Length: 336
Image 1 (cartoon, rainbow, N blue to C red):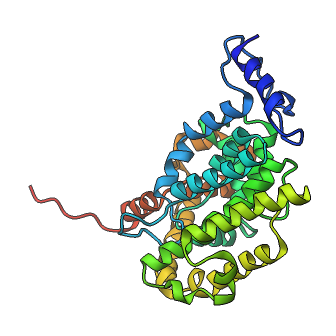
Image 2 (cartoon, rainbow, N blue to C red; image 1 turned 90 degrees about the vertical axis):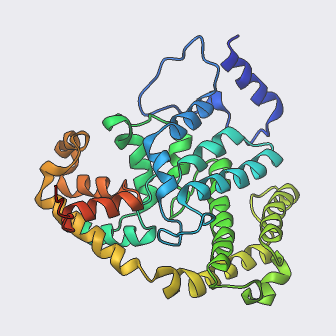
Image 3 (cartoon, one colour; image 1 turned 120 degrees about the horizontal axis):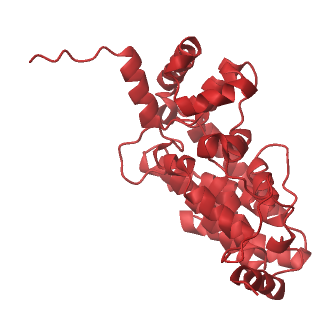
């Protein structure tokens, strides 16, 4: 028995029968022959493929809510991803589900996010003439764009979890559904924390009827949501929170859209960011020879608009600013 086979056997001994077992995966886009020296399950291998990817590293310089914040403690897409992973890990572990699968989905769920957060999505939707959805782009990243067009060749369960972390499609696995909820738990609560750091909110601004149910601090709210989901699922046998807690979370999300996500302090620079990305899109459409060489082979399959969109969507905030400055801002005259 190999190390991998031993790990798979242990999964069957300790996990809930409703878990997604690694040795029962529906496989990868391209078949890979198992290696005798394998020491990881397929989901563990997917975690490593994602974490070692270029698109994962770029998350550290992509906006969560506040565009290019100066403070050291504001969230980025990277820290958001890690928080989602830990919340999902706590829930899956308590319920006896596959923590490796949940971690892989969580680590990959936002790889397709644009620079400057959802402002970038709006611009690319406008440029493409159809909705640009970051969950679909995340799947495109792992299927096609990573490794110079080869993709990461992840398992079906991880890929569908990434696609279904938001939007209409619901993942088949319980682990994928947990990541979907964990994403919402994470961003609502850490965005409150960042908004307080920015002086947009205070704890007293949280509606009292919500605070009464979820708690009066960042840690209390997360603990309530996570623990209630675990306890209610164990009690009812159906994945989810008690109705009053779920409703309070939805109300908190609505509150955040009204007070933070559309707040001119948080979003005051979005118009500039959108204009910048729009000009970059127009420039590369007119000058495709300036695209990186590794994007060009995909032209035969997807067309110019899609490839330019892929390039811009993959940029970090700072790289987008750098490219804009390089292309449109006159350089300082160097006197020798």
